[in-house]
Image (tube, rainbow, N blue to C red):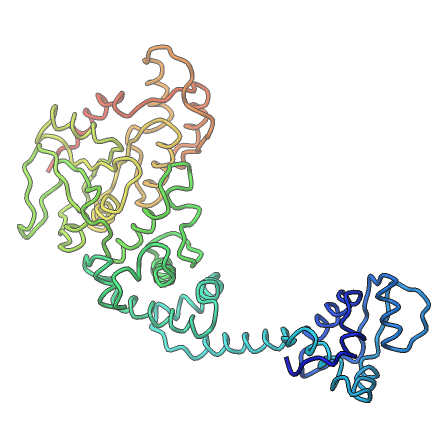
Length: 434
C-alpha cells in the first residue's frame, strides 16, 4: 500500500456501498496491466446506494441505473486535483492494497517457461520426451509449478536418466547416488514421474512398448485397465524393472519348471523340480537363455506347475507361471525368453480377469493361445457339475478368439485352469523335446 488513505478518500470511495464497484474496478486494472491502463470501465449490478455514491464521485446526473461507464482519465484528473490520490488505481491501492497485473504476470511467466524449454541442456532421452511427447510439458508445469523449480526438476531427472538402463540397481541406491536422497525416486515424487515419463517415451520410440502418452502414468492398454485389480504402483515398478532398476527385488519371484539351463554356469536347477528366479537375479546377471525356436508354455496358476512337476517331472516341457497378472520378475523373464527367440503359449482361467490377463500376455509378448479358446471352454463346461451362473457381468473380449466371450456369456460359468490340467499335461508331455 503506497500510503494511508485520506479520510476524505475513504468517505468518497471506501464505503461499504461501493465494495462491489471497487472489486470490478480492481479486476479491470488487473486484466489490463500497467503497460496499457484502461481509459474507461463499465460497472454493473449497481444498487441505488452504490449508484448515488458513484454519481457523487463522478459528478454525473443521479438518474437511477444499474450500470455506469466511468471515464477513468477524468477520474484520475479529479482525484489529483483534489489531492486525494495520484490516480483511480492509486486510490484503489491506498484503500485495499496493491493491484497485481495478472495479464502482465502471465506473459512474464510464459516467457520464463519458453526460455526454460528452449535453453535447457538436457540429455537425449529427456529432450526427446520434452519435444515430442504430447503431455510432457503439461506434466512438467504441473509438477514444477514455477519455471525455476521446474529447471531443478529437469536437472535431477536428467541425472537419473543418464544412468539408465542400469544393471539391477536398487531404486533407493540409484536415488542416493544420483540425487543424494534415497527416497527421491519413491512413488509419488516429482522426479520419479518425470524420469518414468521420459523412459516410457524412450521405450515407445524404440518399439519396446505400445504407444504411450508420455505422462509417466499407465496407458489404457496397460495391465490393470481390464479389471485385473493390479495397482498403479506395481505397474510403475515394472517400468523401473525394464530400465534395470529394482524395487522389492526379492518380492514375487517367478516360478518355473524345466527351463533350459542358461549358458555360463551361473544358474543351476534340478530337472523336474520347480524353481524360482528373483528380479534381482534376472537383472543383475541376465541369463543367456538357449531357447531360440523353442515353445515355452505359460500358465496363470502355481498349482499347474506343482501338478506338472508331480506327474511329468523332468519330462515336462518348459513351463513358466505368471501367478495371476505378471509382476516385474515374471515380465522380465518373459521379456528375456522372447528376446532370446522363444515363442510363448499361454493358458489361464476362464473368467473375466483371466481373459484380461490373457489379453495382456498375448499383446505384450505376441503369445499364442494354449488350449485357451471357445472350443476348449465349451467342452469344459459341458463336463462340469451343474451349478448357478458365477461368471459375473464385467465382460472382457478375448483378442485371440472373437467368439470366446460370447460362449462364456452364454454358459455363464467360471472354469478354473486347474480343471483343465489333464489336457494341459498331455501337451506339456508332447512338447518336452530338447
